[in-house]
Image (cartoon, rainbow, N blue to C red; front, side, top):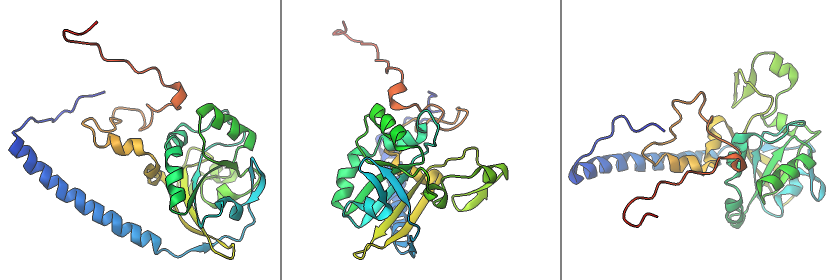
Length: 250
């Protein structure tokens, strides 16, 4: 990793003055984020009337069946297509954060679900390999992923541009990451309330939020692409331990 190029060492008084100035900006960003969240909740809803069927460990289920008795459903669109040997590294990075969240989301009337196009047997095998406990279902054979902007047909790929993140753009893969939220009312009607894509999925990557607090940050500028360093968590090399120093080393 590269060392900071413009690091300064200053007096505590100057450090506090600059920290106070930055704190004011951080608080303003927090207020703006709160306002955006209010505007997000105020978006109109879309009635989901397509009878999507998902393959689950408990048999075929419709979208409305996946809420598990809660009113809200949060879906991670995980890039794992039929025929792939394993799931996407970036989506796996996102998924590594889920197990600790789901019990807390459930207390706020939210069911957490992961959806991919690969057959259920592939998903279950990979989930077992990675040690994940969250619920993962297959949309294989349905248009769910395509309808929610995270799968592109061969004809769309051949055209040189697809519609992703609400705009036409070139895209290198048939699968894409995303997050969608749904609401189920007392009558059982399901509504699509929100989706986000691209860097918007970083909301599920708590590791990045912590790295942003550190002196070196994400330290990705010199890489061929931002997440080049990333591996499936069972494929990282063992972390090197710092050499012991001092009189008690031994």
